[in-house]
Image (cartoon, rainbow, N blue to C red; front, side):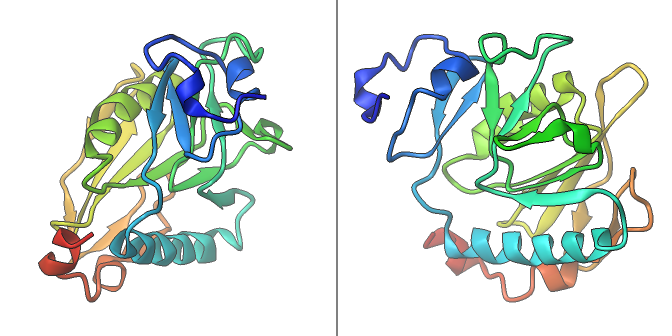
Amino acid sequence: MTTDISQIDLNATYSYADYLTWNFKERIELIMGKIFKMSPAPAMKHQRIAFRLTMAVGNFFEKHPCQVFFAPFDVRLTVKDKKTNKDIQTVVQPDICVICDESKLDKRGCLGSPDLVIEILSPGNSKKEMKQKFQVYEASGVREYWLVEPKDCCVFIYTLNEEGKYIGHRPMTDDEIMYSHIFPEMKIDLAVIFEGMVEDEFEND
């Protein structure tokens, strides 16, 4: 078991089989075989938004068969039928995810794409969420992807089309009621989600 991240080559390409042999203090994600370090601890603004969204989404799914999970929770994204530990090269920890197919769940988390993934941007992870994760969520078939921007108090929503490509919808702002395109009955008051969020707090994160 490797316990120090300095012992491995961060430029190399790895698989989930390698991931299982690591026990680092740092939180990491594996995206297309490359290691990405996560922030040591989410900032207060990030945590408040994550908690409120988890409550709102969780309350809706209390009466539905789908299940809601929040980070840290490993999601192993697969390519086609390659599902062995050596084949899998992407292991992410979404802030929030919704999984409707119970067969994808096991003792290690989720094997396969969630139906809905929610990621909250922060100064240290915006590039990763907006580029690498967007690509892997699209390629692996995540049906709907929410990208939450705390700084501007808005949410960007992407849904897969018939060709398996993300279609971007109009950004939703903090004075609107947002709804999911794949779960249209789920409506979230963004004024509640972003309540008390101020520019100075984000800049001090």
